[in-house]
Structures are given as C-alpha cells and as structure tokens.
Amino acid sequence: MTSHEVADILAHGFSHVGKVRPDNQDSFRLRSPGEELTGMRGCMYGVADGMGGYEHGGIASTLALEAFFETYYHADGSSVSQRLREGVQVANLGVYQTARRLGVARMGTTLTVVNVIGHTMHIAHVGDSRAYLIRDQKAICLTNDHTRVGELVRMKLLSPDKVRTHNQRSVLNRCLGVDLFVQPDIFQVPVQDGDCIILCTDGVWSVIEDEEFAKFAAEELDPEKLNQKVFELAMKRDSDDNLSVMSLRLQRLLPSPPGAGDSRWNRLLQRFKRRGDLNV
Image (spheres, rainbow, N blue to C red):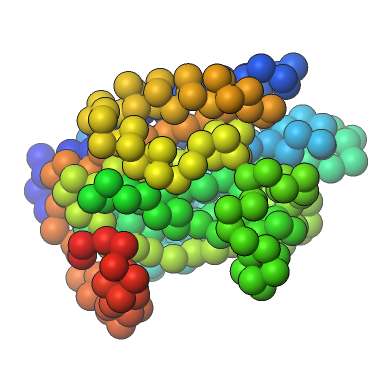
C-alpha cells in the first residue's frame, strides 16, 4: 500500500444533552482516512455512553474512548482482534482505576467501536450502544444489547419489538469500569462500497425504529444531514436520555489485506446470504 492510498469514508459524529438529563454523559471519537497510522491499522469510529445512574459518567465515556484508541493504534498485537481486545481491557481498567482515584463508588460506560480495514469491518462492543449496517434500504443491528432485557430476547422470552418500551431496557449486565475485567464482543462483518454505518447510544435507538434508520440513510447521503434527521426525530419523540449518533458512508474501500477470506469470514458471509437481509 502506497502512502497516497487511503479509503474514502465520509464520517460525522453528533452528541447532544437531550431534553431530560442535566449533563451529557455520552462521547464519540473518530480517526478517519489520511490520519497517521490509519493506513495500516484502519479507520476507527466509536461511541460511549457513561452510566447515567453512576457518578462521573461523562468522564468515564471520554476516558474509555481515549484509552481504547490510543491502545489500539500503538499496541504490539499481531492481529486486529488482539489489539481491539487489548484496547477494551485498557479502557476498562482506566475507568475502574479512575473511579477509585476520585473516590467515587462506581463509574461505568458502554463502548461500541468499528474499525474499517479494506472490505472488513471489525467491531468491539460492550454495553447497549448499537452499530447498524445499512444496505439496500435495510438496517441490520450488528450488536447485542448487554442488558437484562437483551438476555430475555436472546433466550426467546421476550419479543425484540418489546425492547424499546420495556421498563428495564437500560439495566446493563455488562459495561466498562465496574469490574477489573470485562468480556467484550469482538467480531467482524463484510462491508462494501455504498454501505452506511450508524453508531448510536440508547437515547437514540430507543425512540427510532430500525427501518427508520434505513429510510433516513436512503434519503440523506451526507452523514451530517443524516445525523441531523436522526437527532430531530429523537427530540420530537421526547427521548429521555443523551443523544449521540455517528454516521459513516463507505465510498471507496481499499482491497482487503491477507487473511480476510478465513473460515470465520466465509461463515459470516453465508449467514447473511441465508437470511436474505443483505446482498453480499
């Protein structure tokens, strides 16, 4: 890869305190094409939602993203998944230790990060912020909610359409900063030119349906305008939390590096094809 070869990814992040909360405990961060090290280690985008019921949620979300990005881009791990996993653990420990240094009982945050390398998007996820892949006017939520309600859905004891209105929707059973160790979801999905990726905190997805994300993505090619539409609808529907959304447009991706065609990659492709959700 020569120095001038960079992916063409349009990205925009937006965060707002919303109508109810006194302060904004959400954070977002991005490292787009052209920045140092992104050519070798990919373009990375993330959102984090500080725990509303805990103290210093805004500090926790900002610290987690900073520690994760710094660790990922400078870690010695030989694979993307190793660096993502190390980034999560360093971020988790940083929040955990900061809480004790500040003398607060607990600090916590969600963390959802995507890293685009070639035609592969790697994802690290803890908590209930979400990552959506939108293609062919269909929105697929790629992440699992690490909540009590999410567990009920995975156990088939609750219908997915009941999640947004459930009174325990925001009760997390996994987040960064509460325990010394955390188990993140680390996985990868195939992406292609023309895909739209949306990352958002639960203050956004709790009041906007998946098909509405797909509709907005089809109407607005510009990520900033897309985010504005999402924000306006969330405010109109009286979201009771902070509102953070990041939109990506994948326009000219570079060839995937060696290893992208491994068995796990192929199994994931087949799963998408069987579901008929995406044309891959």
